[in-house]
Length: 140
Image 1 (tube, rainbow, N blue to C red):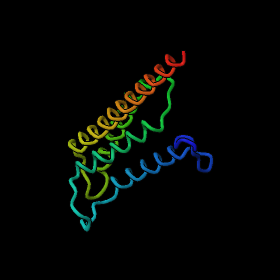
Image 2: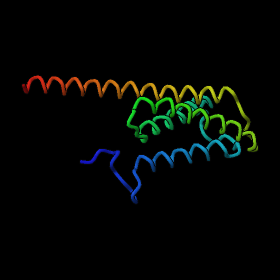
Image 3: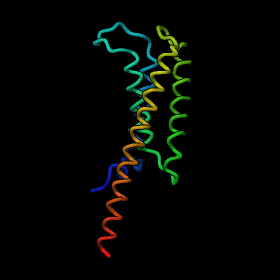
Image 4: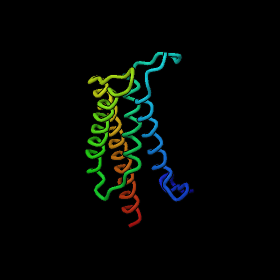
């Protein structure tokens, strides 16, 4: 069975397609005019946190780098620049406005996702390295 990172659709990695679709959905969702609320109320900051948590998690998953730990600050910077642009461009949409607290929620979601991903990866790689060293010492 192939790992998920190797799956391709029309020659493009499935993870990259998911990332592009998700990013487009975030952009469209934040740039639609405010509609009358027919949906259940959900705190705006929770939605910002969740959206950028998902974006950062997908960026962590989809990016490859020979120096794996250097990519995390770049991902955080990319998400924060996008969050600034997103907040600034929302002011051009009828019924929307820029809110610094939304940016803070975006930042919190991004940093939380990157820290969780890096911690899980470190733990998983640490366990795998420990298992490999135990296997190599028992084989000798």
